Amino acid sequence: MKKTILIHLLLGILSTTFAQNRLTLNADLGRDTISRHIYGHFAEHLGRCIYGGFYVGEGNAKIPNKDGVRTDIIEALKKLKVPNLRWPGGCFADTYHWKDGIGPKAQRPSMKNVWWGGVTEDNSFGTHDFLNMCEAIGAEPYLAGNVGSGTVQELADWVKYTTEESGSPMSDLRKTNGREKPWIAKFWGVGNEAWGCGGNMKPEYYANIYRQYATFMTDWGNSYKLFRVASGANGADYNWTEVLMRDIPHNMLEGVALHHYSVIDWAKKGSATAFSEEEYFKTMNAALRMEELVTRHSTIMDKYDPQKKVALVVDEWGGWYTVEPGTNPGFLYQQNTMRDAMIAGTTLHIFQKHCDRVRIANLAQTVNVLQAVVLTEGEKMLLTPTYHVLEMFNVHQDAVLVPLDVHVNDYTFGGQKLPAVSASASRDKAGRVHISLVNIDPNRSQEVSVTIRGLKASGVSGRILTSGKVQDHNTFDNPNFIKPADFKGAVLKNEELKITLPPVSVVVLELK
Ligand code: AHR
Picture 1 (cartoon, rainbow, N blue to C red):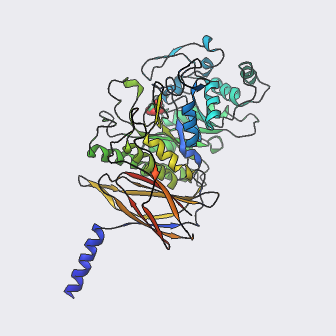
Picture 2 (cartoon, rainbow, N blue to C red; picture 1 turned 90 degrees about the vertical axis):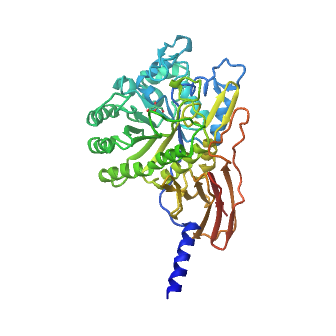
């Protein structure tokens, strides 16, 4: 008897030490679609995102461009399948007067960019430039309206200018400025961070203001309906969401926003590249907090909107560190390492898990600012590890979320633990099943076994993004140091898939 207990005890210890991560995939089930719009991006008039990033000027003979926008960036974002792009802010949006950015460039007034470095904004990149750029990329625009320092008429006019076919002073003005047809501009933010840089409002006050603005932001008889997004909560401010969902009629509210950045400490953010394992663990802890935030905000939304008509729009997310040494602190320029790849992969898994409510999200920001997918230096351009994760994951866009039962090991540091592995699966319109997996553990490989149900898979192929150290990154001298490679670490036998995930790795598999 004693011997049997001992054996069981030993087996127990062994199974915890060498425990496999176990997933069960029900490939033929699933109900909710993963909106491609959770793969959206954000471009603010901030630092070198627009000027010196996307936009290098029409007369630039050194850097190939289309109407002043770098063609290498356009091509990279097309490959990424960027579904929507948010512009012109951020905090900048509530200081922006769109009429300053139309008409002959030489006649446009200048302003001071008060939020970001106090630099002169000459309005040379305006509405036409942005909307034409979106068309070139194949992304839908998501315009952030000025509520903090603008007027109802100004925002209503912007809607008419961009979306109305003809027959109004605004559509006439657009035609005078060289654009005959309206653009497709469905997504509109009604202010940004109204609790802070967007006006320091209380939620009750903002809810009333929102109602007023949204009343005059209608489709004016166009073929598509506008998608209006209320400025949302700062992280865990659940009261903000509660008040908005309670006080704004849902027939004038298509989305409620949420902002959450992965920051160790706002007072001491730490270097983007020279960080310790402790800092890495803290960043991942902050990134994984998105699960709790999305769950709790969704629960509040469920109370007022059980049919989930109003979307949760996470229109700012990503890692935020101390700026690169020697750069303008107001420009928020930071490098991008495998840590950022881990943030991207795990966060997208969270959005996918909650795709019934999270239907738009925007990584901050696209070029040269915060967790960028593209960095530029003069004529040089590089794709960051974050870019590669989003490119690998784009197979999930508009696919059906496939239920995945997940039991995973912990990544432990200093007595604290986080789930080491995260995963998500989807079935696309052609019936192909994709599984993405992330191992955030910087020290250990993870063995994963997946039981496949509802699909007779005959083969598996995949790609991996990994590197020796979590601090590794691409540089302008070595821009392809980190890039996706073919993955040979998955073996399919009968209905069981065995996968070895190296430390800090992202893998995307396709079952055939
Ligand atoms: O993305 C940078 C800034 O962060 C945005 O302008 C603002 O909305 C947020 O606080």
